[in-house]
Figure 1 (cartoon, rainbow, N blue to C red):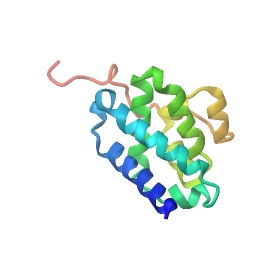
Figure 2 (tube, one colour; figure 1 turned 180 degrees about the vertical axis):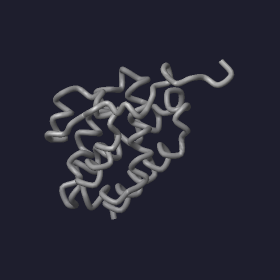
Figure 3 (cartoon, helix red, strand yellow; figure 1 turned 90 degrees about the horizontal axis):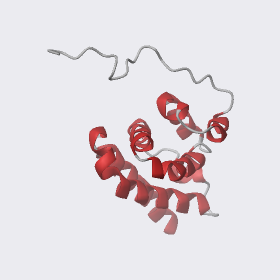
Figure 4 (cartoon, helix red, strand yellow; figure 1 turned 45 degrees about the vertical axis):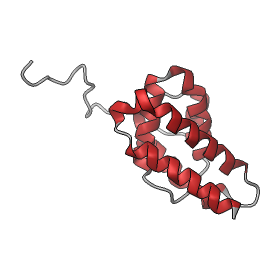
Length: 139
């Protein structure tokens, strides 16, 4: 069925994104993101099956959020498209929850996208030092 096909396509692109080491996202992430974006847009356009049924239980959500965060940071020209994907995923409760865990990503989104998450406190966590602040071993 076309729906299974859609689900498979989204699942595969999530798996590919998750498998790519974060440090390679800037260099190799774009084709993976393009496939993901296309699959998610198709899934959201499907009238027969609710989006949640297509993508709700697909994993690993945390890895995909990290992938989107890295891509968003390194590839400015893709920010609108990444925003469009997030706009779709945030409609699914399980994905909204996962995206909220990716605080750095959400904090770097434009306000209209942040608004989709409702009234969440987007606090930069002081626990995680940025690379600039962390001491380098053997300096």
